[in-house]
Length: 378
Image (tube, rainbow, N blue to C red; front, side, top):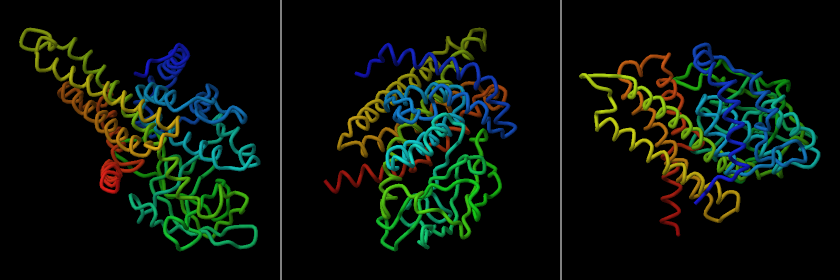
């Protein structure tokens, strides 16, 4: 249904080579040391991975969402946490490229596309997660500036990123009162909380982003006042597909590790691959991952075509892919027995990294709510 073209195969090969050589050998150490490899991200930017579906006019790769699915799966086979950050960064660059003025795009996109500058997406707050429209970070107009106050929570790349795309309240009209500002890291009044101690995703920093009377030029607003919630949700459609692809990559890597382990390990006088129930587990994992991969490509195709069913398909595909990837990784850990619990085997890291994919970019419960509401409201 979605046969990979020769160009896409060459793209996958190039990304796989980069991920195998520059990411995979270091992933466990980065995880243990909580190291954010900005130098490797810059190398990824040189390959065009900082602006995958951004126009070529300002240095983007000009690829489509189906290409992005292939890219993020390959990156995540090497390290789901770093792949997920690259996904978030791409969402930021796409938002600027899609909703910014010509001047804004020319100013910000080139360095973001090469990942010389990194970007962070700031929507979630301490009291506003799934109910994003209830956010309270406020921007008050004062001449040619906005005065920004509030706190953003769980922000990937915070403290390291150069730019922060911030959803904030400019009017008390619910989702219609939200606007989007691009804030530079050196803005007076901008500060960051400590790096969170997390279950996974240790390869990327996660901090609060704090605004205390931070003055942001009106010229840094994307779109018009009140466009912010629309911009944020448009970004999340692609983000959901990308994080699903990251889950697929992690799940596929875990399946490959489990398959190799069962072929090498002997018990009760024979290789574990002679135990039919264990081979059935591998078959189920492979089948479920392939089904999720097909679903993701369908959703990505809908997003590329601006299909009216895009929101529903992206929500469905995100839920299916993130659940499937985590389940495959968890089963791979079980198949490794006690060795799966050891850091050096790499399986437990995949489990820890993939668990959060069922929560972020809209929790999977919210994905079910989106689909259910569309059914009953039709």
